Length: 447
Ligand SMILES: Nc1ncnc2c1ncn2[C@@H]1O[C@H](COP(=O)(O)OP(=O)(O)OP(=O)(O)O)[C@@H](O)[C@H]1O
Image (tube, rainbow, N blue to C red; front, side, top):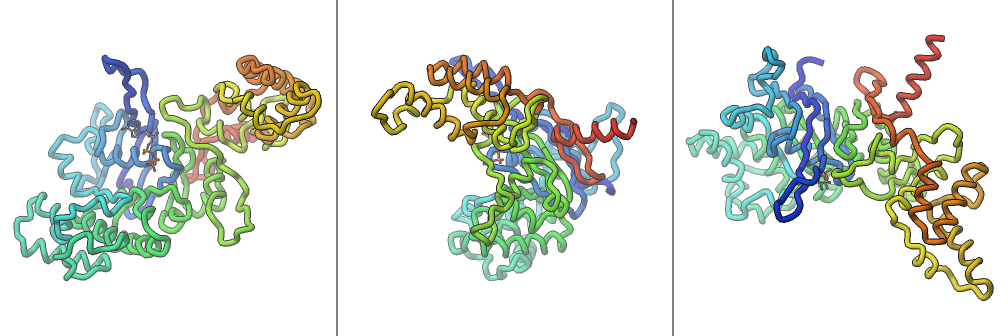
């Protein structure tokens, strides 16, 4: 790739968590925790992940609307191309080190579009004034010239010059997003960050706005960082995609390749969630249960291991993968002390005879079924440990049950942080499964 327009390296944004009267820092929410990628001139890079993965924080940190905690964002637009690193290793184009003056110049060259077009406009300002405001801020004092530029832009985003004197409330959501695009383009930037720009719009309008963004990108030769939680939107507009989970990028690659051949289980799960026109289709059938864990206390090892349908089994265990997931889910819930045995008992239908004994068995069965663990697992060792744990559960000794479970049921995924594996020069992912395959292949080649 030629010199990228934007080059993000190991970018972090941690929010301090403070407590008590003295407001002492007791921890940090690691919203963005070491992300790296490049965006080429004229390219659209998608950043996708569920709510809470850190996408918006990444966006605002990259264009320094928030101060990053660490890392580098090199911006080679705005006439800054071709600069060499300083002797101390720092880069003169590193946005995170820009002075106020440099930052002001950068603000001409990089713009951001937000999800909700309604809240991005002052209701008392005409559309023309809102779009032209930045021209004025950046020194264009000629009112007639400003008006001519804005009228022309309004037409280029599919509105008309006569909309100049109208007010935001007179426009629909889709039209307001067109106005937001005109405003983002008015200073002729090189780089636009669009944070969920179509998520608040009806699906039919979404398609129109995506088409407009695509056309404008060509016309204005823009690079775009396009943020969305929706894989189907990403597919329509992005050249490459970075998949983000809990502050990290777990996979990155060209859109077509990533959709056809996803390498990270999280990507697979996101793709599986794309609705299909056929209601009977299970579209891959991977159900992403639960929500993204808190970035203040992320899971050890691979952060996705607590929800992963491919979570690795330790040596000596070889269960059906869904059953293994169920066992780990039960273990994690027990460790969190988050199973209410009394509640389970109360919800069971009453029995006429031998209430206690039958009740305990039913509690065991109920728990197994809740966690998708069949009555017999086909492995004596696993069954023995599970039975011991369930015995403790029915005695309401959750801690004891958790101890038994965590002794037997462990996964390499919680022990090692996966390294980035390259699948080709543009496609990479971070999953222990690939690391293992690579190691096995290397060992075979050496034999
Ligand atoms: N100012 C803040 N202080 C503390 N934590 C924050 C702050 N802003 C965001 N976070 C946390 O950082 C994590 C990432 O949030 P972020 O909004 O970047 O995610 P997102 O992927 O954009 O999700 P969404 O689409 O819901 O906005 C979340 O857990 C959020 O609670």
